[in-house]
Image 1 (tube, rainbow, N blue to C red):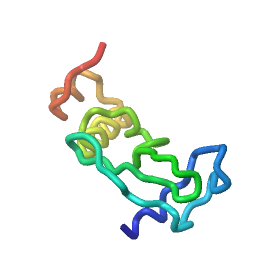
Image 2 (cartoon, rainbow, N blue to C red; image 1 turned 45 degrees about the vertical axis):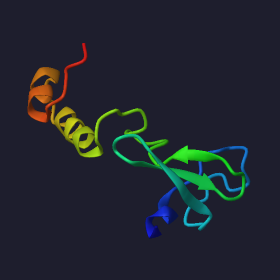
Image 3 (cartoon, helix red, strand yellow; image 1 turned 135 degrees about the vertical axis):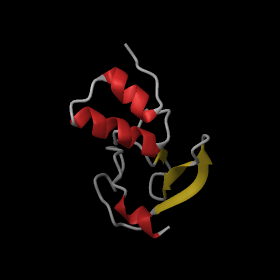
Image 4 (cartoon, one colour; image 1 turned 135 degrees about the horizontal axis):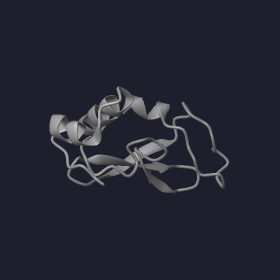
Length: 92
C-alpha cells in the first residue's frame, strides 16, 4: 500500500486537489479482470480508478499489453504489425 502516496487527486472540488504523497488514499475495492484498484479519498469520499488520468484510463487490455502497443506506436510500427506483435486487434 506504500505506492498510494504517488497518486495525485484530480477532483477539482476537493481541498486535496493536486496533492500527492498526502496519505489520505485507501483501496476499498478492486475492479475488472485485471484487478484494477479503486481508490477512495478520505477527505471528500470520492472513489476513482488508479488508472484515471493515465494512458491506461480507458484501456480494456492488461497494462503490459497497452505498454507494448504504445512502445510499438512510438517506434513508428504500423497498426497491423503492432496488432500481430502484441496479440491485439487492429482498430480501423
